[in-house]
Length: 596
Image 1 (cartoon, rainbow, N blue to C red):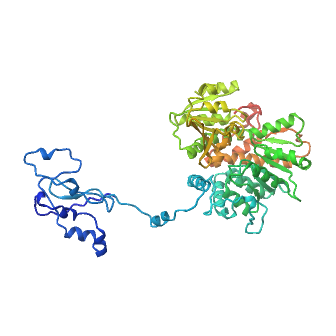
Image 2 (tube, helix red, strand yellow):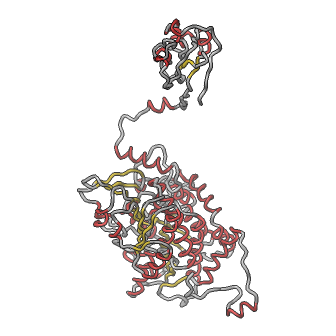
């Protein structure tokens, strides 16, 4: 806070007669004065205060010394306070003869600041320092970044022996002590997941999943926790692992473990940890899963590879990602799909809401949290113009970015052109773009050749499920240097000094580096729950060993459960209107081939 102190009116004395000692009396308290216990006010009151008929204000360009009648001025140093950093400011003589103190800059100091800075670590490893910096940079503003305890424990969760408050130890997470934080996050998520909560309330008495043993492999977030607790309320037993090594919220995993769920996941798993966690979920003596809920197909793949006999008792698979669905269709085509599978990814409620609206918001969130990039004027290339690509492009365009699109499908390509985006090949723009985003669900979309040609500082990230779109493996060579900037942010540096900014090591950006809108995930999670109920309770013979879409009626039911949140009121068909359209008044309202 700036304070201007004006001295009281004093006797008129020519400045040339005022000694420098008297001027210096206006200065702040000295160490001697402090020893005697004198205050600033006492010192100022007792000190002579010089005045003058003519004064100089600091910075005044007027050449007063050249004026014939000007009074000879003392040196500027004589008119200044000794130390402008202590109690703030310098003293100057105003034109009216008063002495004024320059604006004071008060120094704000926390009570424990001096003490904390004196406690500098004497020995600290480079890894520990970079880890603490990266964690603090994400923990402060990202609920996706897990809370860390003060000890910054480097011990692998696999080497720990942890139990919850009931003595149960059938889980492997980062830290069970974080359970309270996770419970609060789950409670917040419940408020934005109205359909799941309504489903839990309506079906809790019937227990449609009684006897179901669900093994799941999805992102372990607060939203997934609400789904798991809903499945449990409907009668299912659940064991869970993470489908992404970076997306687990450690505090949420702790809350689930405290609640009695068998969870095997933590943020920052190694590849070996990833498969170990999946195996711990599946391979338990005396426990045989009969339903699979997968995101990416890794769990299904592991069971096929290690425990194929388990499929004799499994009733069905529910898969929600492009990558996982692609794998299921491959198995079906090869005649190796042993059980019915439900394709949730291509249901309308997943495609139009999770893929489009969710990515439209989360792409900006992920990029901002990791790079603090300004979007206005940036040149961005988005590889793929499916629902995810459409959402990304719309968000970036709205922020003022210049957006290019690459696409293999002429229909999606035409949509991109009609939406105002320029369709290009990647090699045509790779030297000039500032950001590269992949969202195709394919492999080898951005190869080493393209990475070599990128401009200095180019940001590279992936919005598809799999980590195969960007050729990250080609960057792990001796001539390139990897430099960790913060959590999930790496500089990859070329020998000539050029560097690119790689996010989440090419894995899914939004769930690895930020969060996604809870309300949209409510739509997807409700769809998954209904798909599990449908497959588990379906009479034998209804579904064969093939991949199915969720019935249209269920899609409409999921959407209807979310409308009350907006105080929305559906119009109802009259009998005459329904007859004219050949529809049931209660739906479904569109044929299966309809494209929304």
